[in-house]
Length: 317
Image (tube, rainbow, N blue to C red):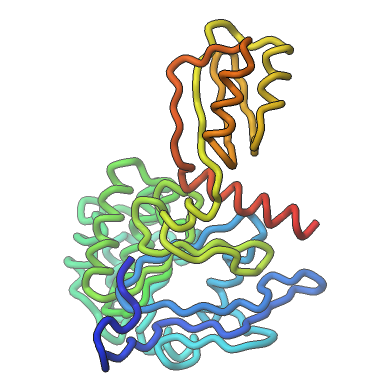
């Protein structure tokens, strides 16, 4: 993760691009954001994760000035969110909306460029978004992936310090997603802050310098992907059986110590364990199971995310 604190004596920590200070937001009796405090710094690529209803969309709405907090403060680029957006400091790519029918891609991008306080040339914007070949097509004739690339072009029509992306690669094929994230990495390398919400946890694992995990409107984890995976504590154990598992075999596996989860499908067994050494030792001691192709590894970000949010859910029910 990029360094956000002073590393030499007398060096000054950069001012945060985004600051949430004890922010709350409710809709009736539903608390969507609950006491959220966080700072985002220049040049960071930050993934915002959370299950449905965690408060991700509400957090982005507050950051973009689309909604006002009930309590606490939100500051973007040193001012209120609406002012930061109005002066062109923020580029946003939302999941839906923002596109006009019966105009061409080039016409829509040109409109965005004309309206931006610090615009880029139209041709450069389309090239960066990978939409030059479809410049003459009508917007309402585009595929889902093409629409997403057009939304990206609108978000990057001019110079900005913060990019906010909500599920940006939905509908894109693999090559388009790879090209998109290469562009995002370049944006961050140039000093911009990139904040993206995604359900593709492999993207967060591969792309993000920093991962934020929300649950019921609260920030429950904040760190690098490696730190989030380490926090989950559990490790993965996988192996194959000589024969498909029967009830006796499954019962024996369920009795293994330090078990977090067990998944048995035919001959394949997948385990999450709080203490892999103890679990594997007991596995061989069963005497009725001979594991083949045994593998022990740390959790991936997706498994760690599930473990952390499940543990949090268990404490709040």
